[in-house]
Length: 197
Image (cartoon, rainbow, N blue to C red; front, top):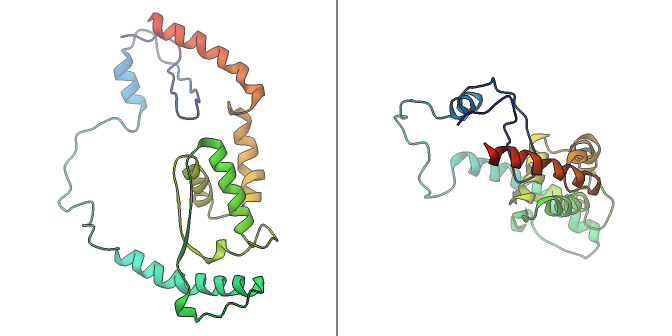
């Protein structure tokens, strides 16, 4: 199959389109593979296993939990004291807290961001502020993973700073915005060109 100086379409879950000009008359598969850093290459297998047996947590995770427990327990103790509910617990008896954000695309990302913001003492002043600092684990699926990747890739900033420094600009080209839905008409022409070839 040959691809003229046209478009190589890459559709993802967010329905984004990337255009790559290819020289006329070059085979599609050879060019597509050479453009990708993920094209298979011949290599040697490692001499030791890449995955450890799942017989327990790793020593690095165990060290993290021990170190994080002191920080998280202090934060939880402070949050419980701020509620005025009269909780009395020794530092050793505080639970390990984790939070997960569900899948569901942009809605899950934005809903999870709202929860994070409400739990984060750096970014809100409501009754739940401070619980984020008491957490040890976070997990996310699909849209929830978009949220966590934004947070972890930017070194755990506040949601307010992500909103103004990253998301407002990034979401402007999203098909989730009604004004951008007219761009979907262009997909019909692109799809027709591909089908015709």
